[in-house]
Length: 49
Length: 165
Image 1: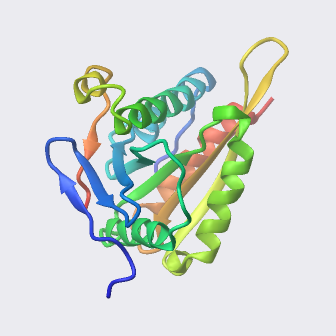
Image 2 (image 1 turned 180 degrees about the vertical axis):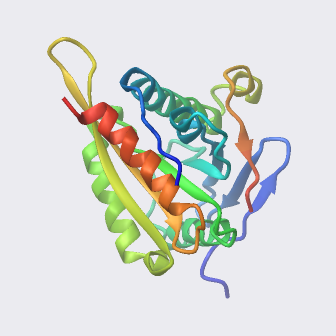
């Protein structure tokens, strides 16, 4: 199995991005921001079902 | 009669939606999550964040079909055993810990836990010189996921890199 060594700064930034993405998508679901805003921020909504 | 609401995918909005008997519109988004890709340095597919919200801000009467509908959605999601969910609890109003407990209770009482496994991790991050904030996360994967050991290793490395002194 491949090994992974995570860098602390990168990891902290990833968690911060995860949370900010979630908050932005919640705002989108409530109609407070547009889909275009999500796209601009690099957020993609999937259709996994 | 089905014990959950019927839902559909809104192609324009890119969300799954269902309307309850109290006329509350729920929207469910599966956000493509790149956390594991960033940490591993390679493209890791089929990892999503799940975000659920009702559109109306008004009072919600208890409606057991809402939870059943969300469980049905998640069950359908995991029919593809490669799919997984990385979940982070919002700390809105300082309630991240409470939300993590509610999420855990919901998972344990659902019938999901026979096929879908959940690993929890809390990340402690200095948000200023004196304040450390706890971020409550969970990783859900199907027990038949062929890549689960690698995914768990990335998740553990993520934790180690943040929490180790």
